[in-house]
Image (cartoon, rainbow, N blue to C red; front, side):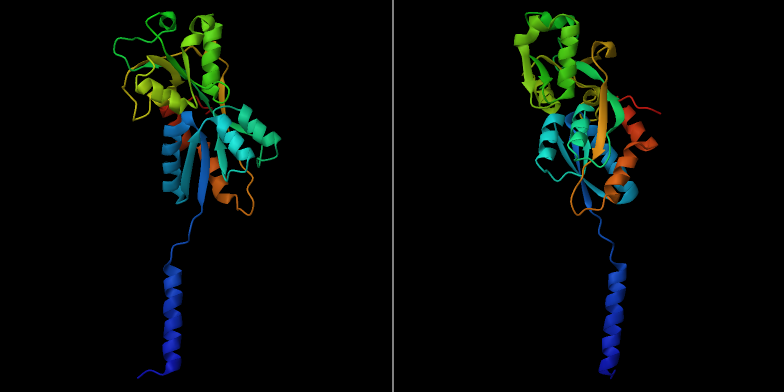
Length: 255
C-alpha cells in the first residue's frame, strides 16, 4: 500500500497535469458597429475568431446612438462607424486610444421590394409612391447621404412629406422589406448580403450625388483592460482577408 506522502505527490502531479491541459481563457471583445456593417462585420468577426480564437460580441445600431452610448460609458472595446464624424467626436472627447482611421467607403442604393417598381430617382416624385424609407439623417450617415441626393437633384421639397425615418439603416431596411414603404435608401452592403441578395430591385446611386461615406474605426479607452485582443481585431480589419470581405459587400477599400 503506497505511503501517504506518495499519494499526496501523485495527486499534486495529476492536478498540475490537468491545469496544464486546460485551454487558456480568451477575453471577449465588444464591437460597436454601425447598422450598415451588420452583415459584413459578422463575417469579418467570424473570420477573426477562426484565426485568433478571440471571441467577438457585436452591438449594432446607428453611429450617432453608439457614440452617445460610448460617451455615457458603454463598455465597448472598438467602434466601427459609418463615417468619420463620430469617431472624431470620440477621439476629441479623449475616449479613443488613437485617432480614427478609414477602413472603407460606403455606397448608397435605392431599393424596393415591389415587383412593379423599378427604382429610380425620377419615380420618387410619382404620386403613387407614398412612403420613402431612409435612416435618421441626424444620427445615421447613410440617412444624411440620402438627403444630400434628394437635395442635389432638387426633389427634396417634392418628396419631404413622404419620407419615413428609421432609427438606423437597419430599421429603414425593415420598412422596405416589410413593404410598409414602397421604396427606400440603404447601403449597398445590405442588398449584397446573403440574407437579402436577389430580393427586390435596387440601383446604386451616383457617388457624385453625395459626400463620400468615409467609414472610420477607433479603439475605445477602457479601464483595467489589456488592449492586445482589441488591437488584434483593429489590425485584422485592415488585413487582406477583411478587405476582401468588405469588397464582397460593396464597400470600396484602399489597397
